[in-house]
Each structure stands twice: as structure tokens, then as C-alpha cells.
Amino acid sequence: KRLILVGPPGSGKGTQSPIIKDEYCLCHLATGDMLRAAVAAKTPLGVKAKEAMDKGELVSDDLVVGIIDEALKKPSCQKGFILDGFPRTVVQAEKLDDMLEKRGVKVDKVLNFAIDDTILEERITGRWIHPASGRSYHTKFAPPKVPGVDDVTGEPLIQRKDDTAAVLKSRLEAFHRQTEPVIDYYSKKSILTNLHAEKPPQEVKAEVQKALS
Ligand code: AP5
Ligand code: ZN
Image 1 (cartoon, protein in one colour):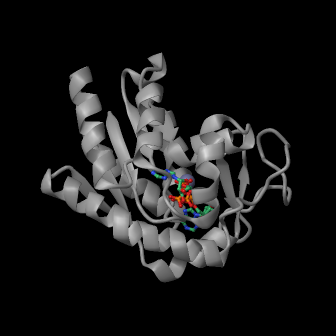
Image 2 (cartoon, rainbow, N blue to C red; image 1 turned 45 degrees about the vertical axis):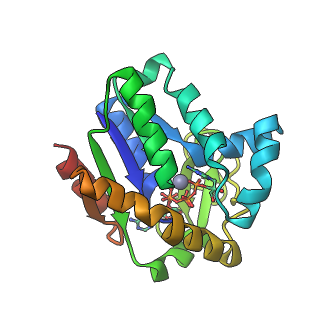
């Protein structure tokens, strides 16, 4: 399957992705994770992206479209993929359509993680991640077995630099202004499914499975 996950910061895209990936054997392409890796490695791409990311603004369309175009060439992505956090502007959505058309495929389904803004601050400020794998935890909703330590590797967890209440405000603004039109874009193509992303993770998972069955 070829899937897109769209939703505001903290809506649960990264939490549900590994579950979908394991079940359907797809490649998981999260532009946020890829950009954070580039920033950490101080690559030219990372240097260009850092300022916007720190402020909670979107990185330029050309930069992220380039990353996705490259990533879609991976052998593991030929049978299907999950795009998590891409496309986030209508321009990105149109460029994705072009890229897929060239490859003779199209998007099967777009899952919209619909949720009220008021719930998101607690989710974002309590999040801890394992940077190497992208696994995320939450001090209250999904605590690791040992505080501050990844369950699988035993490596330390960190908080994202943009996971503050102040930066969340800009991220939400960017979402409403630039990404909500993307939801309309796919709704008009009749491939959009709305999820109740405010529910507990297991219930969201069940909705995802129903949407994909
Ligand atoms: P990105 O990394 O994509 O961040 P985001 O969209 O803000 O989304 P998050 O990762 O914050 O949320 P999530 O939905 O994955 O939440 P999670 O599942 O972890 O982007 C970062 C930045 O990169 C952007 O600001 C931009 O600068 C740049 N960028 C990236 N893509 C771009 C693009 N296409 N174009 C331009 N710029 C781009 O859950 C959050 C927390 O809640 C976790 O702690 C989790 O344990 C917990 N949780 C999850 N589900 C539940 C639940 N159901 N109940 C209770 N708690 C839950
Ligand atoms: Zn995420």
C-alpha cells in the first residue's frame, strides 16, 4: 500500500507508523526524522533546514521534495510506503503526484489524524524519543520501562528541541495555514479517512487497521 499520514504535531503519526509498517511491510519515510538526522550530522541539507525547524516553521518545499524523491528510489520502498509528515503544503502534494505518476503508481489512502489543538501541548512537552530509531515515548501516556532509557536498545532518550510550548504554537500555526489545505486536496480525491486521534493509542490503532482493511 501507498499511504500518507497527515495531522498536527503530536497527533500520533510517528506512534502509529511502526505498527503500520510492521503489519504491511512498507517503508516508513518521515521527513521530520530525516531532517533531524541531517541536522545532527551537520550535512549541507541539515544546515539549511535547522533554522526553520528550530522556529517551528516549514522547511522549503524544494528541500523536502528532493529528500522524498531520493528516498522513494530505495528498493524497500518499491512495494509500498508510508509518508509521515509529507506532503505538508499543496505544492508538495502536487509534486508528489508528479513523482508518482512518473513511476506509474498513485497514493492509495490518506489517514488524517484529526484532533483538537488543546490536547497537543501535553503530548508534545511529555515526549521523549530514541533518536536513532525514531521511537517515541511519553512520560505519562507511554512511559519507557526505565525512565530516560529506550526499551529496545537501552540507549538514552532525548527531548526534541522544538518540543516546547512556545515552538509548538508556531508549528500549529504552520499546520493550520499550510497543511490543512492538503487535507482538502485529498478529500476532493476521495482517498481521505478521518481518524479520532484524541483516543488512546490502541483505539487509534484499531481505526487505522479498519481504514486499511
Ligand atoms: P515532524 O517531525 O514531522 O513533526 P510534527 O509534524 O510536528 O509531528 P510530531 O512528530 O511532533 O508528531 P507525531 O504526530 O509524530 O506525534 P507522536 O506520534 O510522536 O517535523 C518537524 C519539523 O521538520 C517541522 O516543524 C518542519 O520544520 C520540518 N518538516 C518536516 N516535514 C516537513 C515537510 N514535509 N515540509 C516542510 N518542513 C518539514 O506523538 C507525540 C507524543 O504523544 C508522544 O510522546 C507519544 O507517545 C504520545 N502519543 C501518541 N499517540 C497518543 C495517543 N493516542 N494518546 C496519548 N498519547 C499519545
Ligand atoms: Zn513524528
